[in-house]
Length: 234
Image (cartoon, rainbow, N blue to C red; front, side, top):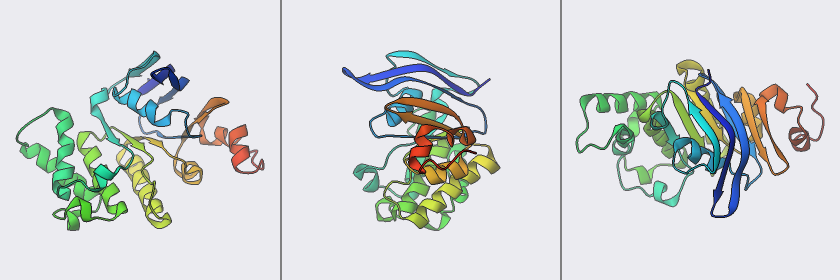
């Protein structure tokens, strides 16, 4: 049974349609990239999965996981970039998804230390978050998301604004979480090239229709052929 299954999901802001009848599923260990045109509701769909926005219709079913057990890395904002806290405080705050508490437990602190090490940011854990580079900040926020759970991560355009070298590093790091630690990944991205390299499934949200299937199957779609000049048949 899939960990997360979405069936004919419709969502809107006021009277404006955002997500129109999307269906897909992810199983444990999948790496799903959600690609497609602007304005097709990719980020809105993630909010629906997280329960941050209500569905107009359709269903989202979880198996072996609850919506509150999903780590989430939202799009980068000015508030995030200027967040007045240390790396340690930002990462540790990811444990708040386990329920609000005034004090963190030894287990919370142990989990934060482990994820800081996993992201390779031990040397900057005492630095102010707002003094870090964009790539460092994304590693910190990934560590924070992992403090919520190591089952499923939802990443909303995590490489936006990063240079190509840092982007490549972040994709490799995400792939490591997926392949070596078994973390299921759902990532919204405009980076088709890296999506095809690392993802095993693609959800393509287009104004003229959606596609969901394997990476190999996606390469045969009209959307992929438009992107790559129509030269892909295998």
